[in-house]
Image 1 (cartoon, one colour):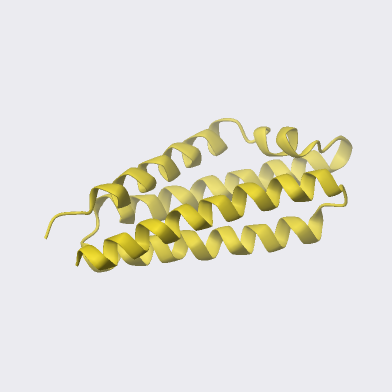
Image 2: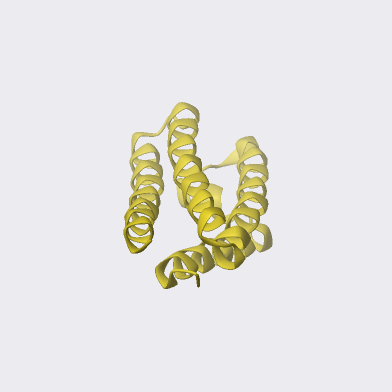
Length: 121
């Protein structure tokens, strides 16, 4: 069975983010308005996201049906955990809202693709 195209596309988008996170880890503290000494911990977090997302997306792009669905599940779980972690770390309400919106939007997108992939068979 060939890979489900939406799974490959969302996995490719995840891979693109992984590359971006590794190439420009300052994007995370910049987006969240983090200043001062905390920036380096958020840059480290961005690098961790980059490595994780490249690993997950490779399974979603190249894996068979079971592996690509596991990759989507891992992506969904990662987004929810990221949301919880960032909400715990961030003190600024606006930054928390932004982090929540982005992480849960990606979780929702991956969930919809996973449901469609499973329905396709």
